[in-house]
Structures are given as C-alpha cells and as structure tokens.
Image (cartoon, rainbow, N blue to C red; front, side):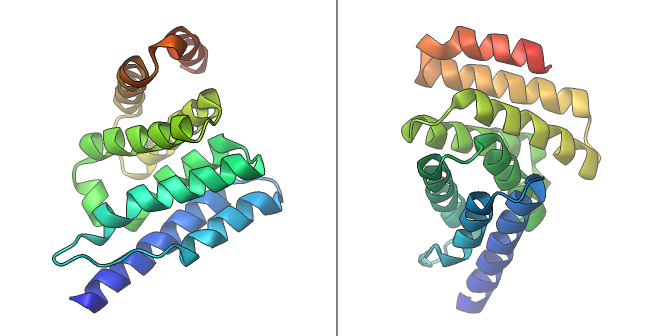
Length: 174
C-alpha cells in the first residue's frame, strides 16, 4: 500500500509540475522554481489515505504561497495546477464537474489566504477550464458556465466585498 500511495503521489507531483511549466510561455525562472519545488513537498501517508485527496491541498497551498511571495503570475500557476491535477489523477477525471468545483475552490481559497490577486487566479481558472474541457472531451460552454458559478458562489461566501469586481472580470473574460 505504501508503494501505491508513493507512486500515485509521485505521478501527481510530476503532472502538477509539468502543468505549471507548460502553462508558462516565458522563461520566468521563478515559475519554474515553483514547479520544481512541488517535488520537494512532503506528504505523509495516512492509514488508508488517498494520495490525491491528501496531497492536493498542501501542494496548492505551498505552490500558491510561494508564487505570491515571489511575485509570479498567478494565472499561470493556477492554470498549471488545475491542468496537472486533471492529468495526474484518474480520480479527478471520473467526476469532472465535482472535481472542477473542488479545484477552483482550492485555488481561490489559497489565493485569498495568501493575499494574492484574485483576478489573476480567475483568468487561470477560466483558461484551465477551456483546456480541460477540450482535452477530456467535455462541453466547453458548460464547463465555463460551471466555473463562473463556482467562482461567484465562492467569492460571495468568502469575500463578498470583491464580488462586483469578480463579476465584472468574469463578464469580460466570458
């Protein structure tokens, strides 16, 4: 069981790091350092733990915090984390809508927690949603609509004072 957990975790980390690197069209070494740092994040195996469920919150938290601290473009990091999570885990692909919601909330929660630019995260979420929809043969319009609903509901619940700004940004992006 330990090997299965570790193999799944290593596969997930590789996909998350690659997702970030693929999302970066520049040679911004800060972003590559964040991506490479994913491999160094330690995730302890809990008894009967699920590597994906246990690892994603910690990896997203550390990657987003480091990105904000380094002044990286959050849209790239968020997009890469979402792409990597979908590619790296069959568990995520099985229930795309539910997992999309979880990944969006996980990204937004960490961006707000670490005081990052929420509009950049929204851009990354929307870009990732389009790519995920295309790669996994999902309806892109439905995916974007779902992403927009999740973003609005999350912001309304967690930080309502920025809701109008987010709605305005979503109207421009969609």
